[in-house]
Length: 305
Image (tube, rainbow, N blue to C red; front, side):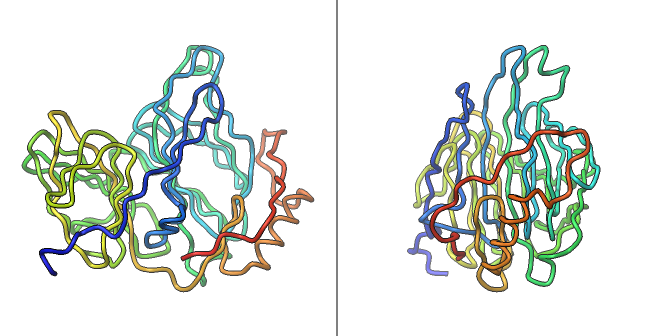
């Protein structure tokens, strides 16, 4: 590698949306600068946010096709329910991996006890586009506890392998594509060498300051997309702990299109999914009576890459 060349392809500053009650979400993918990294087509950071007593998260039932959702929390908890019958409360450090495939519906809410007392929330949700041969697999859901995920530690750095494989370790979360998703924490003055294990790799700064040497110092909420097949050295640039998410994988097997909550290699399939939801042909979430109506969706689907 040319040592005079920047390690970065681009730096994404996520746009922030207020979902109400000052509950903010930062969206790092997709953007006009970068649509996807490996199979990751969507990356949201929710919070940090404090809900007062009587309030909480209320994401009503809504559908997905052609992707897997990945939920990972730093604080708080969320009650997940879906149309295959799953009911699972996720807490910090654990993983909820929901494969939509041919179609799934789910809701995400604050549980009754936490809603009554008040609670806090902070975490990430990603969408991973499925390979073409798996786009229409049966929907499913897997929860993996925090203590079941492999952790690598040394010289002030820890790396938890959330999904896929990296640093010679593999997560027990079942995936359908070659990818990696890693939670890294660096103590003050710590550093970590990140190899070029996959063609497409990125770093999302959650907290603290990341020092990338000649490329500069980066703060929370920035997505740093690395040049193809580029190794980097991560250094903590702050006096406290710096937390990062590493993500990426092999390039997708062709173009993908996104509209609302649907991802597919076929625009026609997206249109069918929209019509199926409009007519409520998707399976329902047991115990739920509400749902998010199909919004007005003008224009063409977003194309990837």
